[in-house]
Length: 243
Image (cartoon, rainbow, N blue to C red; front, side, top):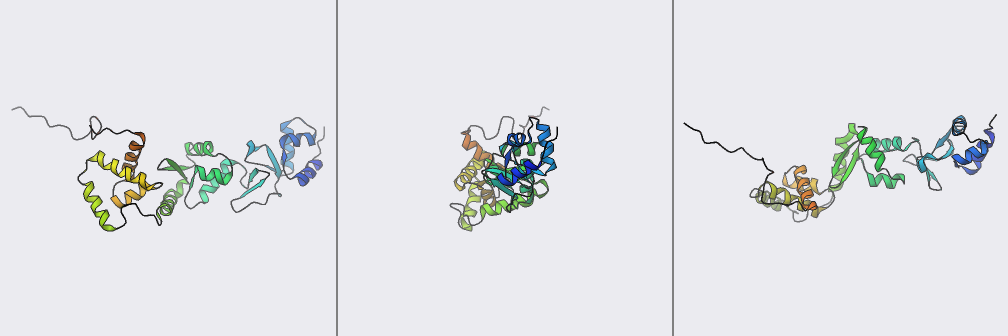
């Protein structure tokens, strides 16, 4: 049986976007394989939203600066698939993307796709407070630095507006034990807000991972001052020698 693609092309020019069921109806077939073959013949492309269930001709979309185009809330990308689109956007970005930023840009939920790309080591990620920033592996350090510069630009850490207060902070930290120190700095990070671990690390000279640990302990209510270190931590006790 001969399936005509002329009517299909005419329908695309008239309606711009067609569902796969509409494509089958126009072709007069119930076969998904036949529909896919005919769509390929006329250079049709699928959307990345709506599970890829809508198509348009490749010359119809007028892509924006991000390589995206929509028709009645059906979204298409110059890259084709959602995964390829996410990779291009992160690779070309100056400071990576948080999941919520990609959700807003692509108008779909990207969490599962980002997790898949990270697990396959196509993307890298760094935790900033409670959220993951997704980065392109070869550009990770540059993108992270740019992101943190943006976070910290023009923001003053409450209570540390001048160099004198930073000096007093370091003197105060010297009298605290290990756990007290990270809990206090974790609290200061929480006061600052997003990017706080980096900001407090900058003024205190304490590793941001230590500050993040203290912040997470506070957020979880996991505070036990009876022990400074975990069981077994610290220097081993000295044994009395027998003569």
